[in-house]
Image: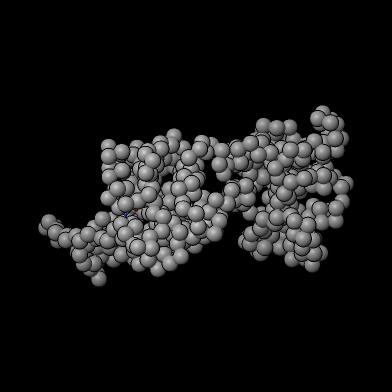
Length: 403
Ligand code: PMT
């Protein structure tokens, strides 16, 4: 399988030059710096004079762990030329926030300040996250500049719409740091699942007893949603059939909501045509009430009998189809993980199953899993679910028959 742990799809070892221009959204660039570093990037901040009016160089120095550059005349650059030294060996330049002013300068190839000059001197992708008042964004001059930059190969991230610092509402808000990091991650992730369609389940199911009560399982949806995001970054088309969760749909994922097991099964079967992969992460309730009361059941004080009937096993049904996609199962166990997880894999004839011992698998942000396949067991060290998800996707991409 090769050793992919720790090197895939993060920004580990990537040199990112973060250009911060003047705008209220500069405060978000501080969180962005921290997030980029958390993902493993080596972050070098170039701060414009206007940017430094909003957030100080000291803040970016502390958060990036690197010296912050503000001017051509800053001493100590490797070759004495900061705008060349900064972009040498850079994997990307991200300008966030990008004010109308810096966008105009970049579109016209002006090089009167350090940030504009290093963008001209770069030999790597340029990402631009605009942030400005809606009127400034919609101004034909800005739109012309943006079109020019796109034509020159720059990648525009945003802007978002919504309430603005000036009190107006409209397009011009800078994307949140998480969305910007997601775009960089997607850019740098090898497209191992390009052209593939992935159908998935995630979250719990809710089996209604009456309009206000029901039976459910513990599942936050975090593991499944992280896998959906990792599949999209790897180039797949993803349909995520989700039980009730509070999580937002990952960027680029088509989410279909399905509260009960029966509904989840119907939605999976509807999404299945053309699917190359089916990943069943959902904690599906094994049983549902034989009947759902139309009205709220009244408390009588006497013991209550509830008849339960088994739910269909969605994964078993999909895996048994003659045209079955590559099926990945999950198993959450409280003991004997190897025995039970491998037993489930064999019983459902799955090429791959991910087992998690219930020490931290449910609802938390971290997980410890073992992947089972025909070659044996592959334990992964405890890690955030987002990271585990990337490794699971990498593993399945290795096993997936050629399309
Ligand atoms: O959502 P989180 O809080 O992040 O937690 C993630 C998780 C622990 C729920 C997840 O990682 C996990 O392990 N999900 C599977 C839970 C489980 O034990 O499933 P199971 O043993 O009941 O079922 C085995 C497999 O069959 C699973 O892939 C399941 O999705 C599937 N199944 C089960 C029953 C059913 N009726 N239909 C199914 O498709």
